[in-house]
Structures are given as structure tokens and as C-alpha cells.
Image 1 (tube, rainbow, N blue to C red):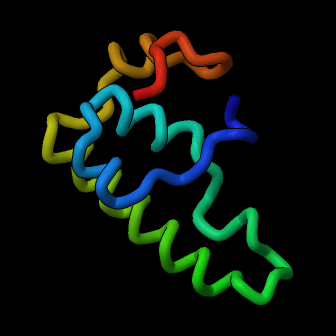
Image 2 (image 1 turned 120 degrees about the horizontal axis):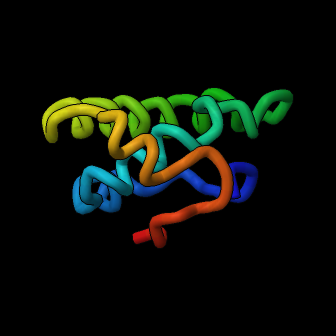
Length: 83
């Protein structure tokens, strides 16, 4: 799952619940990492960084990434269906 997860749109970030935000935070690759050595690197880096920054802000606003959420989403295959 982690290798196949794509960055959400900003609209998806705004609509997501706390669990989905935490899943993205844990499983999305580092911003821009899939565009290394491509001419689009800076565009991808900027877009993905904006999304990840907003994901982090929303998680914080909703009460943080707790140990209970961490256990719920795990580290391997998704235990919580994607939104």
C-alpha cells in the first residue's frame, strides 16, 4: 500500500477525517520524492509540500496523531478503508 498511495487534492485534504489524515501522514512518500530527476520536480515538490503541510495542520487542529490512531492504522496493509 505505501508505494501506491497518491497525494490527495487540497479538496480531499479539507474533506478528510482525522483517521484519513493520519493515514496519509504515515504512508505518503516524502513530498517530491517520486519526481526526483524529472523536469517537473519543483512543481511536484511544491504541490505535495502544500498538501502535506495542510495534512499536518489539520491533524494538529483535530487533536493530533494519538497512539490509539497509530495502532488503528498500523504500519502495513490498511486496516481502515481509504476514504
